[in-house]
Image 1 (cartoon, helix red, strand yellow):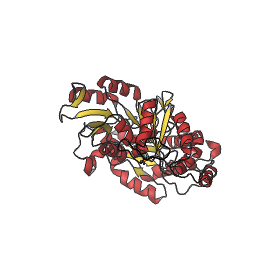
Image 2: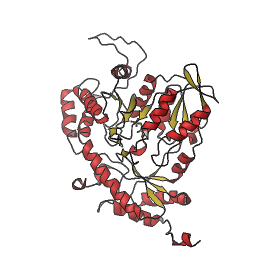
Image 3: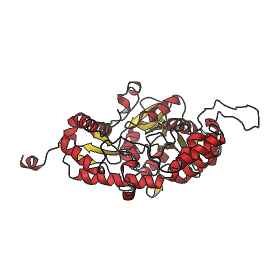
Image 4: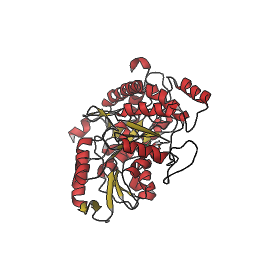
Amino acid sequence: MAQAKLKPAFDVERTIAALRRALPQGIQRAPLHQPRFAGKEWDYVKECLDSTFVSSVGGFVTRFERQMAEAAGTAHAVAIVNGTAALHVSLLLAGVKPGDEVLAPALTFVATANAIRYCGALPHFVDSDPVTLGVDPERLRAYLGVNAERRGGDVVNRRTGRRLRAIVPMHTFGHPVDMEPLLALAEEWGLPAIEDATESLGSRYKGRPTGCWSRLAAFSFNGNKIVTTGGGGAITTDDEMLAQAAKHLTTTAKLAHPWAFVHDQVGFNYRMPNLNAALGCAQLEQLPAFLAAKRALAERYRRALAEVPGVAFVGEPPYARSNYWLNALLLDEEHSGERERLLQRCNEEGLACRPAWTLMHHLPMYRDCPRMELLVAESIGRRLINLPSGAGLVPEREA
Ligand SMILES: *Cc1c(COP(=O)(O)O)cnc(C)c1O
């Protein structure tokens, strides 16, 4: 075919050269996502140590929660020990019970599915949208129309007879899910949505931050996320009762008393220590700078990869302003067989590129979970490569 001849071929070395061009000059080795400590981290951590309040008591936790609520555009934020625990408690507060099923993407980090299992429920995997990489609301609508039904006050999976109890949209690599149609669908079925916003701090959907679109949302501040507390997480909500319940459940369900230890349910030791919150306060102050740096880096990748045959840069959806937590490229389907080679060469070259996560239904513990047809997730899973994305890769003057 004449046309096929004209099309320049995909080439591993040409792709690596473009990635090198995208990175600022002088960068030899680029980790996938290095934290950046350019603000008041030392001051706040020292203040915390000097105060001796490094653990469960201290002012930085409250301060961090206020800053976090502002960043997520919610009335409340509750600081948590990590993002997985934030998801776990959010699901419990949404009413997820043992034996339920919870709709969640197959293309996600394992923590999403694990948190569902911690509740004794089963993840029910749904497919992704090829642009947003997150839950595809239209495909899910069609799927539920065939596979779900109302029984009494519940929504039930027709095949398994189990109750469908919630849906967890995850904003993949910081790119927001198309929330309006998803929330409309969730409302039609009476299913609460819980955003897994662990990757999307600072991302906006139609002008408003991710984490403010559902009744409860979970964030992560692990060392590789856009803002880090070392390890940490948060639950955001507009509902004061839910915020109080989240605080109670994550602080061993202890009743307030000057000295007595009285607990009114089986709570969790899931609070964020003051020492981590101190680091987080300094980090959150830099969120606007991190977002600017990451946008500048994404733009560099977008431009450099535009000229490379056989690959496409993953840009933000048209309605969104993404935080570009992890940049990504997608190989054209016909070149997916060369992904391992590209990964190997990138890593030999000091560019810490990574494949997409192994899809959840390919992991041994989730192999038998209910799922819809996952053609898009499978395709993304074969073709995607994450690129070095730390905010520190871009010189400050450029961001
Ligand atoms: C990071 C992450 C989590 C978990 O956060 P931790 O703080 O590491 O527990 C959950 N879900 C997704 C999609 C993540 O990327």
